[in-house]
Length: 312
Image (cartoon, helix red, strand yellow):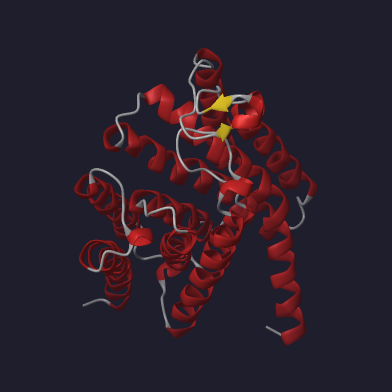
């Protein structure tokens, strides 16, 4: 079997096995509550499989590209990335950092980690970092597991790493900006057409909020705020292609990866398409994008400095 194909298959299979062990062995057989998932566990894993297939198909149609090389170095980075993402996701998950939404959405500056690892070390590393790191982060938090959302996080890092497929990074960034801009505007239009969608999670008894408050204006337009910040970074760092490309591709990964997870809840949780976009996607993807525009450049610059000092 081709070495690249073998590495990709092993990565995807290991990811699936980890998910199954956590939920079906730890959650169901051993009865560990924090490792249990909600309703429709089979359907959740259907979307896990769909996400894995998406990653495989992208690999298959671009399999000649060197971006798919996976060796010992990449495996080490997978483990480091997943561990870092798990710990920092746990630190920022929970009610202290919760964003009013239809489901458990928190402010997550840690989203910059799978974006950076994907761009710096390739889409396979980014996928594993996002998917496995998010799964363990949720397990540490103790709110239950949503494997399809972990796959969505994996796609964030995976898509960020697709920048390595293109020899002309500047040209690819322009295309990504247009696609991301259109999707961001479309999501905000849906928000303004459906501002009456209530969240079903956020409770603030002191202010008489009992899960029936509508999604805030900031949550609704935050994805546009994030897009503008990414646009500023793109042109402010025009001479630093790595910073600009990492942020730009990370933005697309965030939109498509979190979008995948939110849309899956149309079938899993019975949300309407508008509720999934307004109540889940925007409160999650918008703040993510703002953090990405700020933190990804820092990580890329720090990594470049380390490389210069080490002579690599």
